[in-house]
Image 1 (cartoon, rainbow, N blue to C red):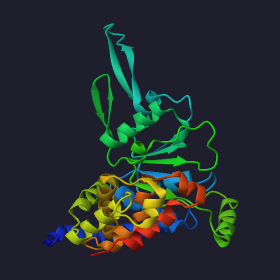
Image 2 (image 1 turned 180 degrees about the horizontal axis):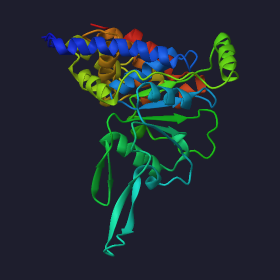
Image 3 (image 1 turned 120 degrees about the horizontal axis):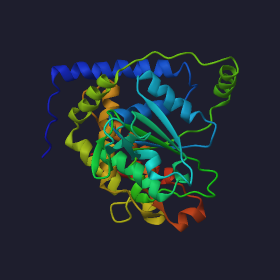
Image 4 (image 1 turned 45 degrees about the vertical axis):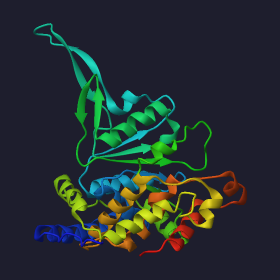
Amino acid sequence: MHTQPAPVEGSDIQLVAEAARARDAVRSEIAKVIVGQREVVDLLLVSLFSQGHGLFIGVPGLAKTLLVHTLADTLALEFKRVQFTPDLMPSDITGTEVLEEDRSTGRREFRFLPGPVFTHILLADEINRASPKTQAALLQAMQEGKVTVAGQDHPLPRPFLVYATQNPVEQEGTYPLPEAQLDRFLFSIEVDYPDVDEEVEVVRRTTAGPPKPVAKVLTPEQIARLQDLVPRIPVPDATLAYAVRLVRATRPGPEAPRAVNEFVAWGAGPRAAQHLISGAKARAMLDGRFAAGPDDATALVGPVLKHRIVTNFRAEAQGVGVTEILDEVVRFVPRA
């Protein structure tokens, strides 16, 4: 038996309309600085409002840092960037306690010095170059929204979002994120080369002086209100079931298409379906709609599932990529 989604309150309808206007305004402001990358910008906004972190995959020089920094400027959010290196320690990310002496009383006490993770948007550049211990410290903060030092919890600001980058070309001296840690990221966002016209415009803009300043579109308080709205966006039971079927079809077995059974070693776990639905809700909200549908889930299959699937040796030997496998999953899974 399928239940109907709960009606959206009048105030929520106004917030949905506000979200759609904000999305258009953010797109317009970012376009002053960034050429193209419309899909990447939309995924950034979906991840922000669904409170999910993003993993950028792209070669150096594609303006990933500039894009994230511009997004933060447009949304009046604090931005920090950390270059991950093999000698980076967990305390370099989370912060540490220092012993201070009160000169008037001579009393000594520890004081916590926050690390760069205490920001609204943190860009973890080349996260796969840091040691697993440092990676784990960041991922714990991402998952729990707090940092624990010397038994004391220090909550992170809200909103809080991590965008990590990985260079897919040069892998020497890197520590690839294990599958369990990759699963913490809502999206894997591929940043590709611009087309020829876009590249001409990039060169024109970057050689003609500093970029234009961007206007502030939303405040952190407004962003938090819209983030709180996303869970209240209704999703029909049929769409929930469709998202679950999509995820289950990535696991080898009787519910999977031929490509999965032939080329996949491990499929996506239950968290993938949760992220697919939360992303679909945020996508619908940003589009000015009061309910998410199967089209929203289908549109996010690649970003949500691509980094959660482990292919086998046969796939590598035959040059079969995860994108091809997911295309067959979408064709294979019925919507109803």
